[in-house]
Structures are given as structure tokens and as C-alpha cells.
Length: 491
Ligand SMILES: *Cc1c(COP(=O)(O)O)cnc(C)c1O
Figure 1 (cartoon, rainbow, N blue to C red):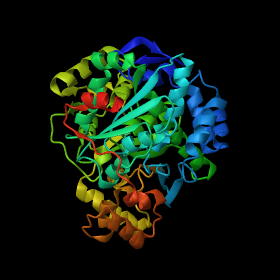
Figure 2 (tube, rainbow, N blue to C red):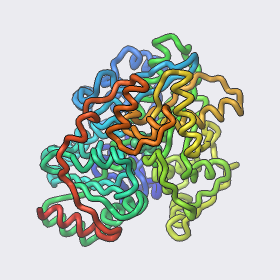
Figure 3 (cartoon, rainbow, N blue to C red):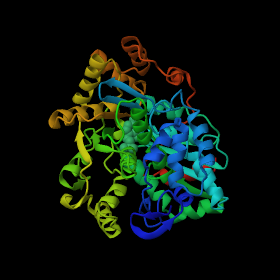
Figure 4 (spheres, rainbow, N blue to C red):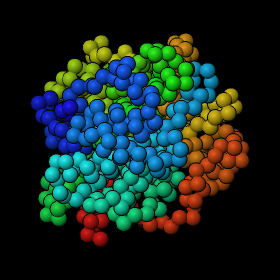
């Protein structure tokens, strides 16, 4: 399997190169040159496997330089850090399931890929004969940062620096990051929002001065953001696995289509669902759920992507994003892999903050899009607990709200999987207030209140958090990221 750039179809990479490089030299995203098909025989095989095996099998279809056994070794090690089944599918009503992707070390779905990525990255470097040290640079809207820190901590030959919007993440997310342990980890708050952090990191990646200075120290930069193929590929597996689980439990019949509703920010999670669909998993609808930062809803409805709009800080901060990087991968596919078009529209976006596409020309039938405001999100958490005795986190609640709107508008009663991206305890204040009608602002009290009022089990790591030592206090200006990289590396 070769990989190509969304901005130049003639530029090719191997899977290992794709993982090491993160982004193509021309600024495009690296995508597989074709989609391997999961036929009936392979699906049967997958159904008989446990999750680490399913994940390794799906990865092996895309990564020819790796043997299935090698990949299985990585996924076994990665998913052994999870508490039980890495992605249980919980039935909440007839025909309605929640796919829980948050049983990993940081209690959010980023762990599904970021526990595997360090293995892929280290092995990929070896395979392409690259002996340099790795500097992982991450811009985070909250959950990626912590998951990347956990994934890469104390990985040999690797340093990791995470930039987060100082006031744009939840109290719990911030505490998780600033208490991070490990000898190779660095964390800095940026005085700005997520897009500022992402812009700063993107600039550093292409900064000739930084590249040269790092090279002199034998260091090369790599990205753990969701544009990295090594992040995206492991995510395809849980869509396939959810389908297998529905089949093996007799909830659906072979070939029966299902819906997925996905709380969406950078478009990485749902894009993996689209890839699973392109591989032959029977999907009726992929429902793109946004919060008040509803740029994707507008795009899917009108074809206009316009970042010149108000940015909202919401109770689902991991979706507070205006530039959804991975959308480029989808647009590449649905324009018939028109790399010239990608250069054009992403040039426009950079210059004016807007691009427009003629939706009648694009094959987007499998997608639906909608959004939920803060009140709807709160109400959904309360109602879902009352009706189904299930506690949703703020992000997953957005998906449920959008799914409910979709189902009542269309009367579509296809079996549906809500992709659940975080433990409710990670957003304890908002979730507790939603189920109890309170206004608690103290995280510790909210965690205890949530345990008391719902009986939902709280991960030990979250209970321990208030007692952890704070190890990272750096806060920088928007334009200070480059200097921070030099400072951290000379420590
Ligand atoms: C990252 C994240 C999302 C958004 O996922 P994307 O892949 O960026 O679309 C949603 N919910 C939670 C809890 C997350 O951490």
C-alpha cells in the first residue's frame, strides 16, 4: 500500500514514512492510495478475534512493512493499559448502543490511537533507517495532549512538548497535563485558543531555523496530532469492531447497515468511520455532531466553510475547533481525489478564511450533520440519565442530541451506535450539574457528587488527581512557542 498527498497525487510515501513524516512536504495530508476491502471471509475472521487482534488485522491491511504479528505485539501492549475491554459496546435501548472509547489511561478516546502510535513511530523510524531522535510536538484542545504525554512518556529517543490553550481546556484536563510524570515530557499553556496553539505548532514544523537547529542536535520533529496517519489508522478498527460486536451478539444480520453518531472536532474520529465505510462496513449514515462551533454543520448543509466567525468556549472543549484539519482527507476523496482542487481551496482558506464547494458535485450522501447548543447538551445528559440510567459526558451528549434530532426528523430507525469519546468524570462539573440541577464549580466536589447521585464508577486515576504534584507551570504568549521549544530542549 502506497500513500499519497492530498495536494499532490504523484507524491508517494510508504506507511512507515507516512507515520514518521506526519504531514506531506507540500502541506497536504498523507492518505492511503486505495481502501482495502473487508469481504465476508475477512469479516468472519475479525469477528472471531479479540480487540487487539482486530486492531492489528485492520492495521496490517494498510501497513505492508509490518507483519500482523508485529502489529499484534504493539496493539496487545497498548491495549493492556486499558481497564478491561478497550471499547465495549453498551446497549442502552433496543437498537441504540454506546461505543465507549474511554477506558484507556487518560479516559478519552484519544488513547485508542495514542497508546499505539509510539510503537508505530519507533518501529517506522527503524524500518526507514532513520536514527534521529524524535521530538513530538502537539497542539491540544485538551484530550490529545494528555493522551500523547501518556503514550510517549519515557519512550527512548523521544521528547514530547505539548501546547494547550491556557484557558481553553477543562480544569480536569489541565490538571491531568500539568501533573504529567516522565523524564521526557514538557507542557506549556498558550495565551490563546486551540487554533492559536495549532497554528503555532504548524509554523514550527516548517520553520527552517528550527529544523536546522534540531538537526544539529540529531533531532527530527514529528506530529502526534490527528493528522498523523498513525493516529487515524488505529481508529478505523473500532468501527469495524463495533460492527463485529453487533453481528456476534445477534443484534444485526450480516450486511445490515448501521448508523454512527460521532462528536466531532478535528474530524479525525468520524473520518476513520468513513474509511471503515469505504472498506465495506455496511453504514447507512455517519452523523457529524458539533457543538456551538458549528462550522462543519454549516459546511455539510451549504458547501461553504467559513472560519470568519465567533469562537465559542463550550462545555465540550475538545470540539471547540474551527479548522477541522482532517476534513481535507474527506474532501480529497469526495472530489474524486482532485489534488488541484485541494491546493486551490486550502490556498483560499489560508488567504481569506473561506472556501466554497458545489455540494451537488460531491458524494456526501452517507453524511448527516447537526449541532447542539449548551442548553441542549445539558438537557440531553439529564434526560439520558433519567431514561436510560446512563451517564454521558458533555461531548458524547452532543452526539446524542444531534442523533435524536436526526432520528425524529427522518424517522430513521436504523440500529445506531453513539461513539462515546470521554468518561463523564473527565467533565465532572458540567455532567454533575446536568444530572442534579446544581452549579458546582469545584471539580473534586463534582466528582464525588456525580458518584453519589449516579452510582457510575469513577476511574481511580481521576480520584487521585487532586493529590498529584504539579510539575509543569510554563505559560507563554501566542508567539512564544518556538522559543519555548528551544528552552525545553536545552533544559
Ligand atoms: C478529540 C475529542 C473529540 C473530537 O474528535 P476529533 O477526532 O477531533 O473529531 C471529541 N470528544 C472528545 C472527548 C475528544 O477528546
